Image 1: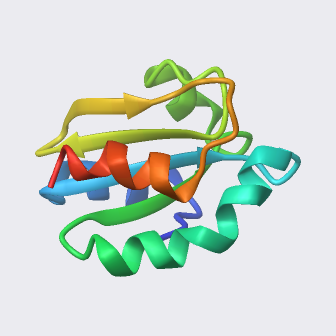
Image 2: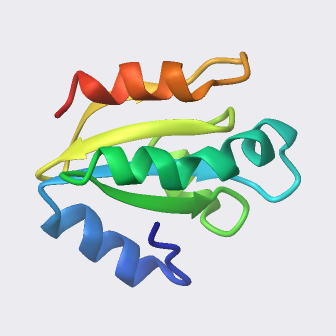
Length: 105
């Protein structure tokens, strides 16, 4: 999973990658901590997607631009445009995340 440290690399990824999954998270978020250990498994199964971990607190402007108010959130981007998002208050399981992302393969 790519973890950008500044806005420029993140913006470049959004523009150049065919299929990008933005995983909005924060270190203090318990539901995000629950998801972290399963993300490598998800990435290994969905090799046609590029996964980017976006720290909501570090990239608050990006989160606001994408209207991300709850975390964890997943936003699927194809050729620079949002095509789907998984945002809800419920703790997300690997099965739920995989089911959501499978629709965009």
